[in-house]
Length: 98
Image 1 (cartoon, rainbow, N blue to C red):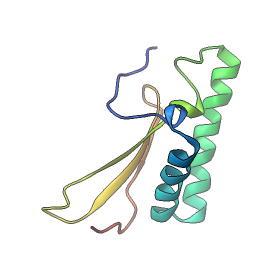
Image 2: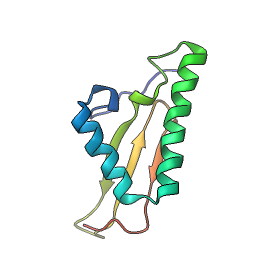
Image 3: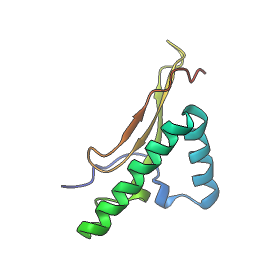
Image 4: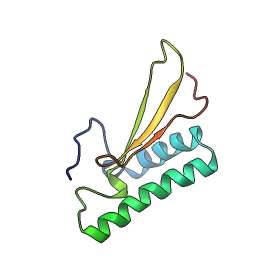
């Protein structure tokens, strides 16, 4: 398995302040339970990295925050915490509005 190249910056590449802002953005669009589930999936990816010793393919820090949507058209935005290959969380909160 290989890591898909993505535009943007991963949590691992961010400064502490940038990571804090990115997590705050996720928190603003999720319930407490939704945020906990998302963070647990990211942590599980780190466990997979440790078990397989494939730190370039798996790991909590490899996730990238991603905002998407068409605010001009429907004014509804979505969030994603994209990880390696198919390991990502697509978050479509019921109402992040621009």
